[in-house]
Every structure is written in C-alpha cells, then in structure tokens.
Length: 229
Image (cartoon, rainbow, N blue to C red; front, side, top):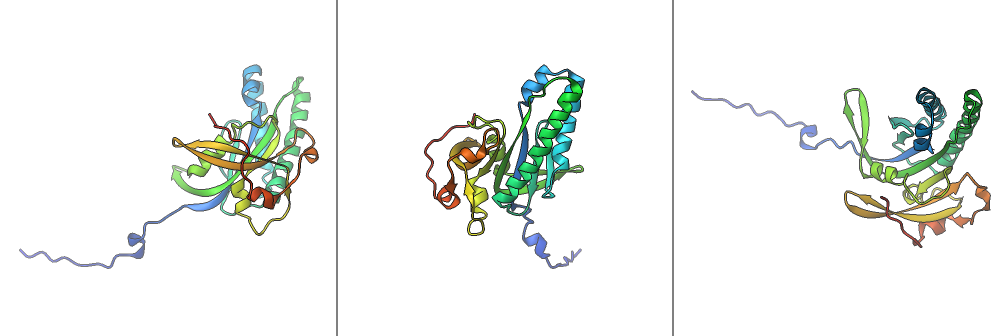
C-alpha cells in the first residue's frame, strides 16, 4: 500500500519562535519597617493597617503602571516604556504624600504610633512575562536585581533609588540633577553584577545633599562597592 504525504507550507510563526521579552521599567514601592511592625502589632489590627496602606499605594498609581505582584509589604509595578527620572520622582512623591497622610490617620484611629515609611526602587532592563492561570508574572534578571537592591546600605528608610539603567534609557532626552550617587554589587545566579544608582533621601532635607550633574553620573566611576546578602 502506497502512502501519500501531503506537504503543507510552514507558517512563519512556526519558523520563528515568539519572543515575549521587552525592555521595561520596574517600580517597587516598599514599606520600610514592616517586619518589626508585624512582630509588634496585634494580628488583626496589623493586617487591616497593611491592607489599607497597600491600597493607598495602588490608588496613587498616577502613571497607570501594570501590577505584577503584591508582595506583602511591597507592590511590583512595571511598564513597557522607559520612564524619565522626573516621572518616577513625581510618582514616588504622590505615593509618599498619601502614604504619610494615611499613616497619621491610622495612628490616630488605632491609638498608637505606626512607625512605617515608604521607599521606592526604580530599575530598567530586559523583562518577559508568562501566565499561570489568570495571573501574569514577570521574569528576568532585571526583576531579581531590583529586589536585591531593596537590601542596600542606605541608612534612610524613606528614599527614592534610581539605577543607572534608568538614566541610560533616557540618555540624550533628560537633563536635570541628581543628589547622591553610589554603587552596588548585585549577586545574580552566583555572579556579581555592579549596579550604579542614585538616591534621594526624603527622611532628611533632600535639598541639603551634594548635587551632581546627571551627565557626571553617567560617566561616574564607583568609589565604593557593597555585596548584597
């Protein structure tokens, strides 16, 4: 018996695997002092306070960022476009103002001082997404690096940190100033990667810092390094 094989044209999508990776910006507003707060606060009160504070962060998403995860004391936002440092700074300040107001309100309502504050990490790089059930998750070294940068040597608990990649993504488009510069060694999959960043301290007067030009920062050679644990 002779078998006839029908040849069908191969679709272009079959020849070229779909690549869902993209360059994007990550923003992680993170509640400082959360572990101590959970350990020292009555369970139900702590849960309700945390819920309301996270809701404040979500409600003040003025850049219409996508939400990847709510992580207990932080929210992982992302967008597929490079955000300028000014956009990120404005976003943080809106969140910080509403967060601080809510802290004062909740402290009064609960009859005790709530010692929590807000910091924000901004990073830029290659990202990808994948779906599990109805959830869309982020994947990539950029995500790991951003989370590692939450554990840094900055003394303040209320600050905005922008990595050098945020500035490089806007190179030639953004002109302005930054306040502090430093560097970080980030361990990713057993390898150390040096990540430069600047931060603005909102706990103290941010205008009292040494101001450097952004162009100087882009050519900056780190004076110190720290290994993230």
